[in-house]
Length: 266
Image (cartoon, rainbow, N blue to C red; front, side, top):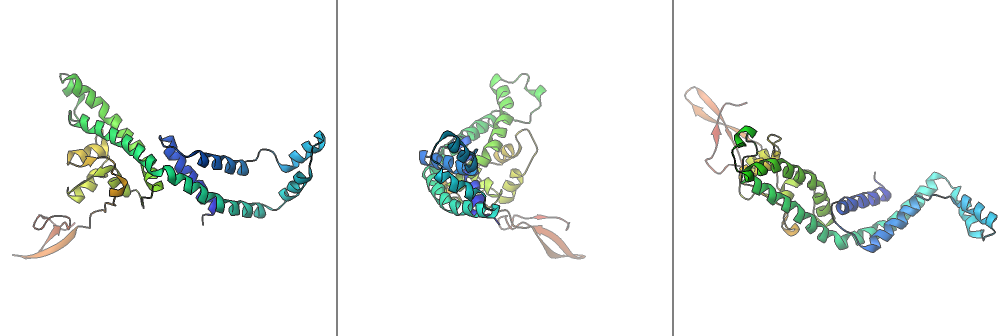
């Protein structure tokens, strides 16, 4: 079971993920972090400081008490740190909230900028075209072909920080499935085709090229418009009466009425 110290560390790591990607924090947040880290990572023990005070002729009454307290059991030290973290965490969380939405919008803008570059590139050239087929293509097409996988890789790299920023800003991100709606707008495109494209690993641009190919728009949404995009329902096997008995056929619940495909039961 996670302790409050673990929860505090998790918050700190999340904020660091966002700031490393271009987000920011308040000055008070950083001051609290510095003091919290100082508590957890004291380089000199009270006993060492007591010895220095005695040698240098400084007041040591308080240091003597601290040195005695340091001899407490590890359990006691842990209990004290947990009690401290119960006060530190709310303070850090409150400071993190002050910049959370601005940070999400900053990372969203960067993600959308990259998505726009990839969309433009794939609107210019087939990213999976053979290099020899591009030898006589315009320079713009050749450059787009070269840039496409770079933009796709950048989108993949930005997902974690974008997701973390969204979570800090209050969005519910239950699992990796939530990344789809956080990075694309499927609209009314067939749900199963969208998920198939999302999970593809083929091609030089992976899922992003596959999504664009079926008409999905790439880009992170305004957070107040974000909603989870569920997976498609399971295919259903039904039967109809044929000349020699029941004939199985498969129905996709995600299809519009009448839009099914037939086949043998697998």
